[in-house]
Length: 201
Image 1 (cartoon, rainbow, N blue to C red):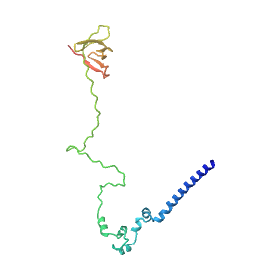
Image 2 (cartoon, rainbow, N blue to C red):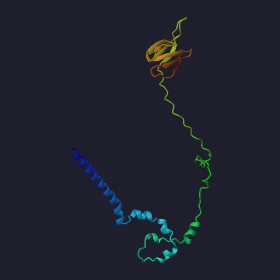
Image 3 (cartoon, rainbow, N blue to C red):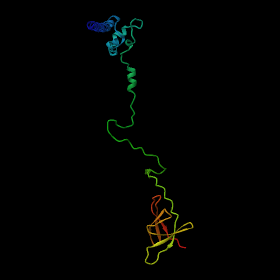
Image 4 (cartoon, rainbow, N blue to C red):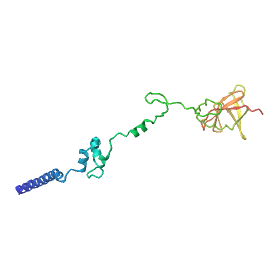
């Protein structure tokens, strides 16, 4: 039984290899009988060969003769009239030598009449909005002799007594007390300190 299966495998391998060999031979032999393909003709006859033919062959070949290809209709004779026309064209460049490294010319920007140089605009970043004013009024001192300095502050109808470092209305911290003003900071918005002057009366 094993000999039969081995012979069958060998026979299948032999048949497969034979089919591949037949296909390879057919691939090589069939183009020889069918003639050269268009791609091989294009590769074997380049265009410059037809252009470089002598002028006598083009003159002898008439338009009525058979076998005349469009490539052979090219006239290689020199067209003196066209050459003279192209020689009369003068190049009018911008005056810049492209073979010399140089910066681009500066074109002045149009400005106001009578003004030669326009000032360049300098970019100024937008300023952050000013913090809202602290709604407290400083209207007097409340300290006793020998005690730390304290002041009177009012907000609407509310009156507060505070010293340096105290927080008023759970939001405003008294930073520094001066004889004519007080520095207060809004601790909620973490803004800069603001000077509130002493109000008389």
